[in-house]
Length: 101
Image (cartoon, rainbow, N blue to C red):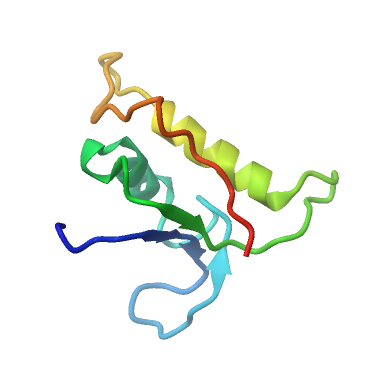
């Protein structure tokens, strides 16, 4: 973990080992929301930059997909376990945000 410099966040259309590198929206693919929850709730990754590598454009309702994916990640970041406590509490000091390339 000490060598981890950046997370590239995207879900995957293809299953593990399928050799299909097709990105999809957070929670819509084979990776699933649980894996993203682990990343965004873990204090060890709080200061590791995260790049959103999901398809761009807009939803049929005109909402930018980056906004949708960031909202999903924020909800996962704020999710609480059944006991009402965070599994691994992230800091609100570092909000998730989109970075355009």
